[in-house]
Amino acid sequence: MIDHEDPVTNPIDAQACQWAAALDRELDAQEAAALDAWLAADPRHRGALLRAQAGMALLDRCRALGCGDGSGDDSAVAAEEEVPAPGWRTTRRQAMALAGVGVAGGLIGAGALALWPQGSGIRTRIGEMRRVPLADGSMAVVNSGSELSVSFTRRRRDVDLAQGEAWFQVAKAPDRPFTVTAGRVRVQAVGTAFNVRRAGVGVDVVVTEGTVKVWSEGGEPQLVKAGQRARLDDGVGLAVSAIAPDAAQQELAWREGQIVLDDVTLAQAAQRFNAYHEDRLEVDPALADRRVVGSFQTNDMDGFAQACAAMVGGRVERGDGVIRILK
Image (tube, rainbow, N blue to C red; front, side, top):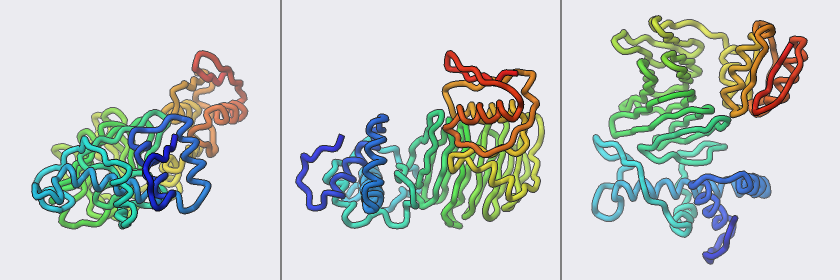
């Protein structure tokens, strides 16, 4: 996948820029495996890749704003206007030029793979999760099958969660409130961390750090603190309640690619696993109310099915893209 058509001084940076360009267009399975091997081969590779991607993102944003060509100022965000989604991509040589001067700064966290372009949409496929640094220094971790859009101006930071789930670590900026819209619900923070899950008309907010302001259309804002959750269900007003630290940790284990089950029904557990797979998991109605416990990898549906079948005294059958737990 990697070519060597450009003479460069640092071969690691050269390869990093080529991988950054490949990630920008998305990798196939073979390329993804090759990238994993390259990252594991040398501890310097990950840092080089992050620098290259930051260089590409910064060039995209400067191009969109007209930075450096007399057509606009050099601010990261245009005053009173959303930065348009860029339709231009840098060359490997240009990306490497910025990679060499360390433009990543403080905008990219450990383990992140991209600085998300301003004004863009973020969509994850079924089974895919992304850790996405945002242009203001905030971080979003986006769950499987989710869709959101990011719109930052000089005075506001707005995110619209169209579907799915995301956790946000918000960079402090008192003069630029960070607001997540999820259907009828608004969640606003200055510098804090919280999770928002949207399923149909229902919205669930769990605060893991600091305090946020939550309200529904036409309703009064309520303060929700770390260790609390806010829920809006169909036909029911916004309700705020406490959530135990271990319960919050279990609910947010998806950020580490895990599902933690603590005495839930088999039907509920199967529903949670189905959110991460194209193949379907079906449960015999006779077993649906049996209780299960355990911690499982989101990508291990077979292991989950076998373990749960053993817990409830069932058996597993497979066929036509369906895994069935039968009595």
